[in-house]
Image 1 (cartoon, rainbow, N blue to C red):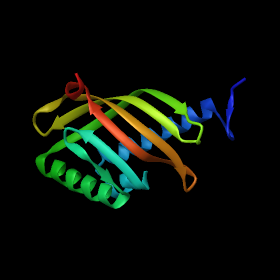
Image 2 (image 1 turned 90 degrees about the horizontal axis):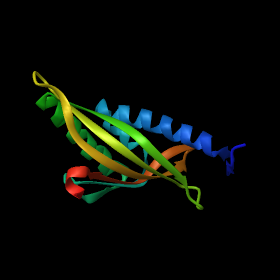
Image 3 (image 1 turned 135 degrees about the vertical axis):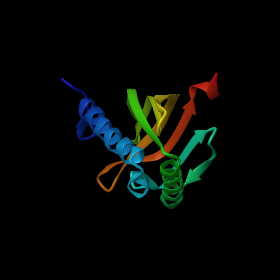
Length: 147
């Protein structure tokens, strides 16, 4: 029998987290900046060194940054695919969910093919807002920046 965490079992929470990332990452990889930003809380934060060393705070700032990045990638003929795996899910006492994932970032350049661009660790604090999981805090660390 599964342990019940609030109204959901741990397995149900893990499945929900998996569905969240499937949607979230595809929105990001497709350049749907405003929809990606909507998967963060209103005051959500993101740090992703070395590119984003000062936290981006707030959904509006995230949307603007994601839009500028998506437009630049399109202009440069570049596409990224982020492959989340090995997702560790920990439910906290306050009901938030800590999710730690390994992320492979595959870069495709027009006329040059695809290759592994980076390996990262993504650490998120997910909270329930408007009936669904949203990112409240995100810290992404590239392996080549952390060794």
